Length: 122
Image 1 (cartoon, helix red, strand yellow):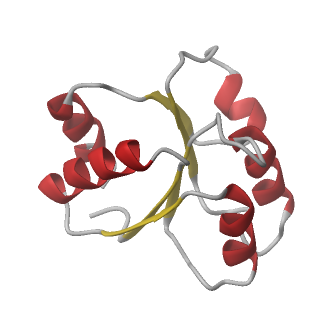
Image 2: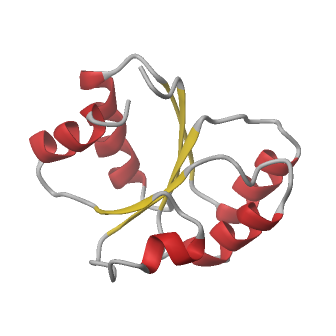
Image 3: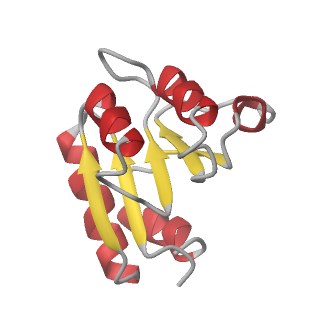
């Protein structure tokens, strides 16, 4: 297994539950979800949580995923945590790398498709 602790930052509770179910069907990694990006940033900086990888939604209130990614990448203690942007719309090919993300995944609606995506990374 590549990643043992996975953090999903997403304000949509249903999307998090769907993700967790798919992850648990292909991995025994520890899963955490935070729904408030400001709280997530505080917990990451304080090292209260120490994920091996972050799946980050883009469209969230209070702070967008892009703003949160920028904060993560400029904070020395957490900038090396890989981040996968995980959102509903398609992204330009260069979008994730320019922002410092490892990748960009469009959220699948199909459970098996999400399982297959996760199998490759966990």
